[in-house]
Length: 354
Image (tube, rainbow, N blue to C red; front, side, top):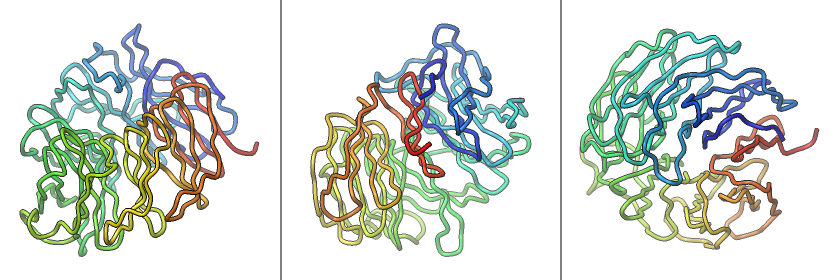
């Protein structure tokens, strides 16, 4: 258990023997990148990435909610700088390599755009209430490779997935009232499906020939979408849809033969992916912000109070364990090298054998 400077909902990531996370010192307005030693939890260094006014946020958001990205050489962090998306790259010694501002950002719910890796580029989602964009930046320099506008210009916070579909790498995400697929090399929009809703947070998951998209606000929908096709696929490629137990914020999980979903209101649901048949639905908590994760045949569901329910990965509801940290958790657990890493409101925890 190690104290963390500042506050934030950024999930921890593990890269080799290092753990990285983002935080915010609200008194000084500093946004921070923190490196900790994986074995001991000791802070190796803390860097002030940027100092900027505190933006307006949703009560369940923070000023450091994005998860950083590591490619083995550099760590990439994203924050909001007044009205611009800000991206910075650091090496493992904490030296800044470059900074970039790929586009504007405006949302009354605050900022959260976690970068993802694609070859020599990083992909940044800039969905917001304005000139929304999707952009690719060079890992070496931060230079914009391509940037494309997003239709509908509506706030959403989904982290993109990059998946090969019929021989073409596609960037797939929900947002701007649509589920869409883009050519990863050019940014060209290839296809779209209306919905699941107006505003989305949860990320896409896949299994076989199906994509699963979830949203959001003002209505909750889970869509199973057939892979492949071009243009508007709303009337042709939705295989099944459900409203029951669908989350707004937590991302779903495909593990083995099942689609696992946990809603913001603490309802756990297990679906048969191909048919949408609901196999089990049970309440595990009163409110959940982090996403469900899995390892070694178990599912891990951590709620906002820091209580983790461990379930056996099965088509029914088998509780393996329940544990409490004693402080709130609004991020997603990281699993690496035999340990579980949970970021609480004040501490980072490593769970497992010494």
